[in-house]
Image (cartoon, rainbow, N blue to C red; front, side, top):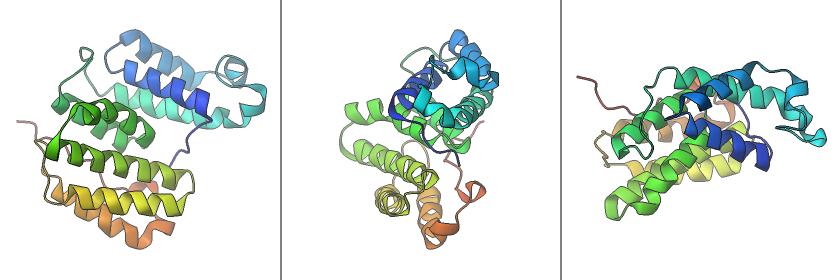
Length: 190
């Protein structure tokens, strides 16, 4: 699991990753960022006191670049179904903070059961990011609450198996590896 970065580069990279959903130029920038040296990151992406995060920044950019290569370019403001597919790709690449950033606008516009369900998906994503950052207490709280919100829910997807898998993972949270994170639910491709 890749920890998040300091606030400014974290937010800038997340914005670039989300832009790459619909912008070929952003995808090229991600690919270049994934392969750049520490000098290129100094000053432009990371301050002098943040250079120890260069590896994590490149790793997140590399994961995002690889994930974006599997997705078609979408028009800005995709449908919820398209956003959920992109969220699945990001989640499965270990980019949980970015899942949160992607789904939050949909949550803000939603109401009723859809809002509750999106909140559960966001809580699970943030819970796994807390785990990557070494915050077991925060991870446990968000994963428990998120999985509870997802039980019996749908958003064009059957979320029950995901909710159960997240709940089962709580039993071994301290030893959970990246390969133990359950895959995000996806719509069946016909």
